[in-house]
Every structure is written in structure tokens, then in C-alpha cells.
Amino acid sequence: MPAPHTPESTRLDHVGLNVTDLASCARWYGAAFGYEVELELRVDPIDLDIVMLRHPDGTRLELLHRPGASPGPRAADPAEAALTEGFSHLAFDVRGLDGEFARLVLLGAREVMTPRPSPEEGVRMAYLADPEGNLVELVERPEPE
Image 1 (cartoon, rainbow, N blue to C red):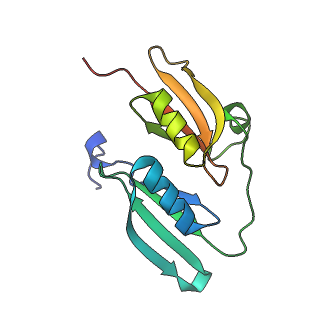
Image 2: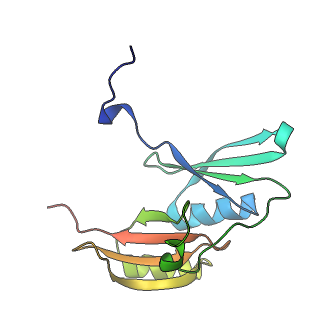
């Protein structure tokens, strides 16, 4: 009989993002959010290249590239993204939302939704698109008391 599931027995390991330019995206997510290359892999039978990024807090973002891949739907904003089932966006918790938003735009992100109150009380949010057009949400939650 399998061991009972507990909340401590599982956690999200990583999120995979298919991209056109692995090196460029790895540099951007490194400069934007502090991710570093953890490992690089090649899966020869399907011509797939992988760069696993790791943040100092332990979260991981897997970038994948396979020649011949075609662009999938990329929503222009969160409302459009909610009309398609499947991947919608990546979200990062930040401090100093306005400054982080401006910094990421200078790094090449496209403004989608400027900083504003979130529907979640006491929280602020903003949306950008990374250099390849993937939606990225920035969330600023109140400091714990």
C-alpha cells in the first residue's frame, strides 16, 4: 500500500518553457530574476536542448528548444491568456514593484499592464512580456508582520 500523501511530501520542482533562443533567454532570466544555469542537457533522439536554471531560493525554470518548433498561442495580456486553456504566465514575487517593473522593461521586457492593485486585497501586480513574448506577472505582497 502506498504511503499516505502529505503536503510536505510534494512540491513543484520546476516549470518548463519552450523558447526560440536558449542562450538569450537564460541570460535574460538570469539578469531579470537572478537565475543561474544549473545544467545543460541534450536529448539527441528528439533533437532537444535543455537549459535548467536555478534561483538561489531553489526554484527552477527549465528552458527547452527543439528545432522546427512552431510558435504556440501567446496572449497579449492576462485577459486574453485566460481565454486559452493551458499555460498562461509565470509569476514572480518581488519587492519594490514599480522599480522592478521599470528595470525589467530596460532589460527588454514589453509592458503589458503597469503596476496596480491586484484583485487580491493588499497585493499589487503588474504584467510584462519577456523578450520572446511570454507573459510574466510581478506580484508584490505585503511584508509579513
